[in-house]
Image: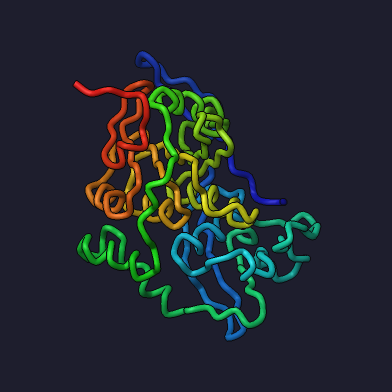
Length: 300
């Protein structure tokens, strides 16, 4: 897939020991992505997300699924960039793609339209209903949890999936070893998918924690690999309500964060029977909810 660069090089003055040296540095690119949905009744502007370019179709699909605006991959006919005067770059729902001429100007890659199949009803009013859960809106946590129930979210089952404590202790090293863009810039978050034995199955990087997770879930969504059960998802930052909401929609049983969880993230995990782990530092971590899924660790 053609896309705009996700790294940018420039000269900076690095000050070391009181002396400045002019050297080249690498920055991660941050650009807005507008997500649109084209349905029978017209085109709807859904959201604008700040993100690192790359995997934009997965990001759009994951965002729409995580917000409950799409439910299955069969609802999508194609996803395309919005380009007015050059051949469109298209990803079809069957996984095939059309080639396109090289496009000039990063703006051509900053609008993605998700085209729905004929007859698929898109609830445009839900766009407005969904976006009251941000921290600036002042809506209480209880209402946020009730909104997830209204979307049809149910608690995860008490199944047989367990993960060993020593497996969790190896996840952060595995994640860091695969963060290629972070190693170059130091400015990216990551969301990674692991199996129960600690094998890293997928990793997606982005300047935003939420966008990294949307890319991971969106890739699984488009590849017809949802729900994500018997797996762990790890995020490089903290565990917020939004992170847990997206994981819940994908039916992820275990969420591991390098940083701290918020109080509402813990409430969500408790309400929906999810295992939430934070402050992972090698063999040291905190289990906030769902400790019964963690095997082989004692207490004192």
